[in-house]
Length: 193
Image 1 (tube, rainbow, N blue to C red):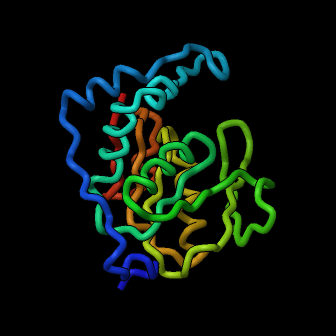
Image 2: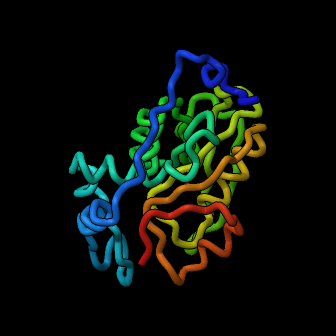
């Protein structure tokens, strides 16, 4: 039985998503810009802002993010910062709540935090515990590179007593080891390079 009381309410409907077409996805992917040497030399930054600014492309990618998990989650968690944007749209489209996962020091009453290593140091994510324990959470982020942030977020959700229903990512950068580091057979990515 889902932990979210709203999911048991027959008046609350989770909208049926239609699977995005290959041509719609290709169009959306073309809107993702590439910025060389940002934020540091040698980095190829994926700029999703043009995609977010295009209504049909945003709808297509949100539908593609949640489609494999429809009916399997009670709430959607988004990682700061661009993951918030996608998770907010996905939560709205699917009729569920939003669970923000923030960088350390951004919440007035964090219930838990998890640290993780970066290529250049350490970082931490934290969250409140405003969702009932046992809730099924779909975790959404914009980019999967090395996987450190998503691994920490998944651990954080589990420590708070939530079931991770799946992980959905807009863009996976191949060759950086994120997929193998996550070791999640249900990892879903919309685009890959």
